[in-house]
Every structure is written in C-alpha cells, then in structure tokens.
Image 1 (cartoon, rainbow, N blue to C red):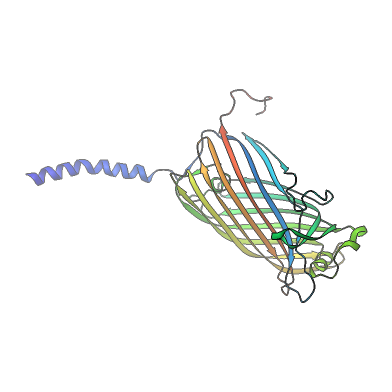
Image 2 (cartoon, rainbow, N blue to C red):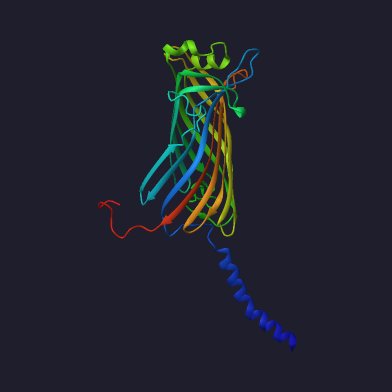
Length: 329
C-alpha cells in the first residue's frame, strides 16, 4: 500500500517537473531591451604604427602616428545616431609640442542578425620615429608623409542563433547564455602615402621603411580572414566576456606615387578583440580592446601596419518620447 501511494505521488509530480524543465529549456538565448534608445560616454586611446622586417645594419625606424587619448559621447535615438569625440590635450605621442603633426580617425558600423559592416577612415599628417616607444624616446619627426586609409570590414556569422555580435560588441542586446560562432571577414582597403617633396630632406633615407613607403606609396589590399568568437555569459547575461580572433591571407597591388609601377604581393592579416563588462536593463559599462595587423611578407622586409586601441564605455538606456521631434523622430 505504501508503494502504491508513492507511485501515485510520483505520477502526480512528474508532469509538473517536466513542465518546469520545458520552460527552463525555452528561456531565450538573447534578450532585447525595452528601452532601445541610449546615451553613452567613452574614454580611450588608439595607436597606429608602421614597421618593417629585420634588415642588416643601420637604424630601422618604428613610425607611429601622433595619436592621443580621447573622450567622447554618443546618442542613439530610434534610427538617428550621432557620435563626437575630442582629443585629450597633452596626451599625444609628441605631448602637444608639434601641432603640424596630427592624427584623426572616423569609424562607423552597423550590425544585423547575421551580417555586419564596419567602415573606417584615418588621416595622419606626419609620423613620429621612436627608438624605444616604451620609454617615449623620440628620435625624429617625419613631417613629409601624409597618410590616408579607407577600409571596410564585412563580417558574416555562421551561427547567429548562438552568438550575437550586437550583444558582444556594444551591449545593444543581452546574451543570456554562453555561445559562439565561426565567421568570415572580408576587408577591402586602400592606403596612400603622399610624399611632400619640400620636406623630403628631413627624412631618414637610408632605411628599409623609408624605401617601402617611397616606392610602394599606394596600396590596394583585399584580405579574407576566418575567425571564431565566443561570449562567456554569467548571471543570465548581466556579465559577459567575449574574445574575438580571425586570421587569413590576402593580396595587394602596390603602386608608386605616380602609378607608373605596379606590383602584386601576398599579404597576411590577423585581428583580435576583447570586450567585457556589465549589461543591465538601464545602465551598462564595458571595456573594449582591439589589435589589427596587416603584413606584407616579402623576404621578411615588408611593411607592417598595426592598429591597436582600448576604451571604457558607460551607457544609459531610455524610452522614446511620446511626441515626435521635428515631426521626424
């Protein structure tokens, strides 16, 4: 009789337990916030460096743009977005001593469920040669190069049902469960070194890096990289840490300043990112690190272009206004 009672109680509890397990299994991996608008402030720095492979004898410079730390703010309201950032005084490589050597950068991006596009523009007027960047020992200033870069990263995620880049990159969504995805990144880019002839006599001409910039002043490069990203999630997605890495080959067309000579070279590029922070319903804060390298592996003397950055962002989400702004927003 006792066994009969036990089986009756067990039979009564099993449907409820099965229902609870089913509800738990149906908890969505991603969560969209009720307040889709946000305002965000951020502070960080970025560096751009140019180096060449090891050569025999002589000083091989490590050129760097005169970048500085920056502080900015962003507003995202419905379909409208605006960003603005200012360089922090006395934080540049030259410490504000040479205002003719400047660096500027513009980055825009948009992500869908499976696709993502990132566009960047960079303009560096003059470069700094540093013997030992860690000790800030400036060897000389190269005022003659004028560097411009335009590039687009087109990213395709293979498994968007397990990984959201919008949640990982800027906390626009919440990823409640850990998950990752393979992806491909296609990067067409163009970079140009304009040589201001009136200042060429101040440059170090007996270096491999100078010869690379002078002879291959214009580069058109296409990279195809494959990578993987995984979002580690804790506390139902409130805390996340997401590493991102990709590597792959490419091909480039290198031309001199007057486009009278063209050469094809192979390229190799890899990129790493790391984002970690807290993602709340109203407030969010995260750290972001970025490293990108493109190398021309020609006899170990090719030009290496390196971009690296780090930033801290703090944001607040809010509701849309009841009335339209200027009958548009």
